[in-house]
Length: 184
Length: 418
Image (cartoon, rainbow over all chains, first blue to last red; front, side, top):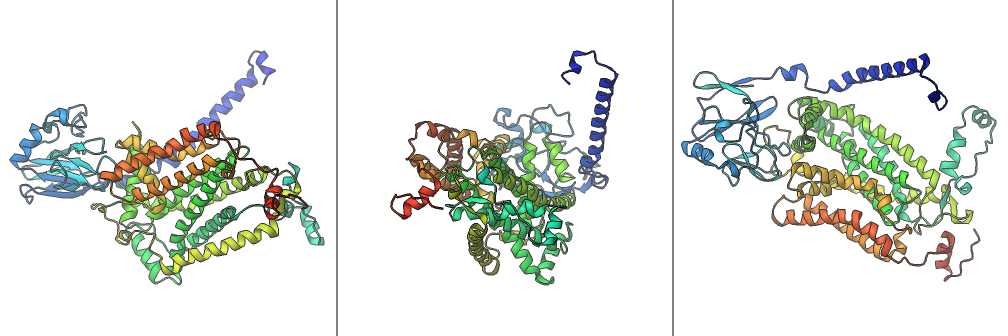
């Protein structure tokens, strides 16, 4: 190589580089299917949405449904709970972002940005720390408490204390009539 | 370093002469595994390399036969493990040996690693040997973690959830990586399936790195309790029969210890809640990893920040990679380093303490102590070791390995006649 550096690049150099580059592209193209097969497959993606009947959920009750292999908490909030959630100053929140898949993503974490109808709080029940399922009606903020590493969530599903970095995720959902919701 | 080559193989029979001129496999194995010159003063802490080879072999052999009966599917995994326990001939034995074998493997590897720390086995010229050992340790942890998921009990499932969620702490691509690992939006059947595949693959990668580890060992030769270099042939003994016998005796004692767990307390090292089938909607009260991960788990939980905790936990292992360059002392063995010897034992106690704290709930004084001990762990490697090498005054080293051995026997009159 030291000798060829002194010369003008010639045809042979171009062929070496072009062949090498082509082999590299081919190598990457061959590896991609081997990696991409690990991503969620068509049958997993197909379970994208579920419909839930809300009429049986009492005031103050939380039910857990399974969506995409994950639990989703549906909380029928009382007027007092709604008021507490709405009156929480934004400055008290650890995560200032709404974490609502139904919105753009840049909104603040006020209660209004985390619900469609104030009486129904719908969040993915996976702790944003390391994926445990928080326990309902526990913790210092009367919402959820994660037993694994001690994260406290309030009745808007927002992280208030503990190692979790984000608010519980609000999935994309829409109400179908008065008493049913479609998640996903 | 001519003294590091054992006596070459001399084929005696006509067949072996014919063979050696075509495939000189005995010519390769004989000087490395039979006549290899080994320091004459190795103590029993040096038998754990051989014990680890035994552990790896046992895990692979029992694992291959267990895979003939196990079903890696969320609906049948838990049941197939019970099927192995109740229906398969000797299934209970094979599974208990495999499950406890994992713990025995880690007991042996921790002793092996602390032996390396005590006698300075990571120092020049053995840096690559040590680094390959750290790679083996990481591969072992990955293998053990995936193996623990396979019975699909509650702790399998939630352990898998917590550990794979560690990757979600990586900025920007974290969620992509966890979905790639899970093959879905949570730990589920695709996760179990691929963990089974990888749990079968990784032990053979371990075998490959073990070959490199032993290769590197046979270039530099063994360290020894004095930490001195081998200077003459008198300092060494052929590996066989001297160390095959010593390793063999230690192995028998180790097997007795192993058998005690398998036959009398097969579940004592496991978590009872793993006999409850995985439920993706209920997290157990306390998620606790297997005992051999507890110190690292304590470090993870000591940091009140998700990404920070993950970085510090992986950092606790990564610091071992640069250990050969952190220790500035020229003297290898702690036997001649009065201060390092004390700090070594403090580190042992700190690691055991972290293990204890990792099993406790993350609250109150446990968290405070986890933070203190985590800080000390890094302080040991990043501050104490570099400084100690500069300020410590080592004791006088013996002239040679032979003198250190015979000097004790005849009161300092080291007359070395092999």
